[in-house]
Image 1: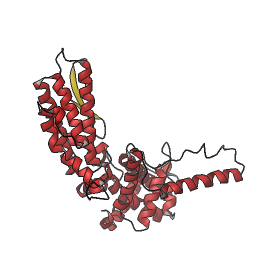
Image 2 (image 1 turned 90 degrees about the vertical axis):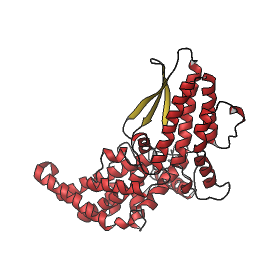
Image 3 (image 1 turned 180 degrees about the vertical axis):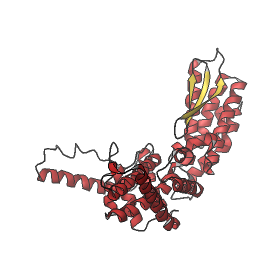
Image 4 (image 1 turned 135 degrees about the vertical axis):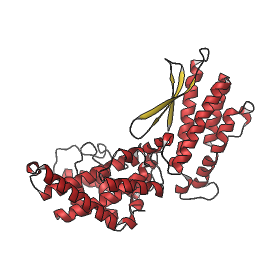
Length: 372
């Protein structure tokens, strides 16, 4: 989403948004010296809220809802998306602001911006703000079509409950060119779609590495360094297990991301996963007590993760985990090709790398019909 702020040094309203790697910013409008600072800060806050609510229609589309009947979740989401049409007329309205019907959160947010603009009472400011909001809405619409160019690039930092087949195909092409990933994957592709494609390529890498090393696929996954992300292996193991059982990459990735988004909203969907986590934690406590472990484990000291992904950014987090998993497969493949890689010359290193990439591409191509 776009965040708005006041640049006091230049007395301007600034819009800033993420691009997947780094942020972009632009000047929306310049204030006159007699405009109240409190009102301008409030304007920035209301515009940020409006952007947040509008982008939620992208990250939580009606098509991803389970129910679509009257007053269902899908119905409410579609009502919010349809409210895009009322945003710009609300901002330029000069009368009747207090009497306008505000049936959706988007209409309420647009009305709050219009009220501040009315207080500031500057037609030029209203024009500049309306122009910027129009650009923001257009960016969301482009992202919905799978076009993450220009201002729509901020979608590359968001996690969506659905994924465009066009975006998945684009990510698949990028990973074919470089199975280890590149910057374009993080800046020009929706991360949910990229994670789906990456899961497909990760499984291909796990398969050829297991075949090459004689290890079980789960052993390959378990060899990944956990570093500062101890839950990364959990998500990679879940994906490997499910795809091995015949699931498609999309059907494995989407529940992981959606569940994390539910946690971010402050609630859990379903209790089976939580029951499993509690059971594992209880078994850990009992095992520690039975072994007379010095670890001070008790129900009050256990920190139980509700999801294996970062709820604030589950899709980018999962994408990073999967690319880390692919690199782990390469290191393991390399190790089993030569136990002492430090003694291998550059030519041999490059030969091994090309063999790994070729085998991964061939395996991914064999299972290409199970990507979507």
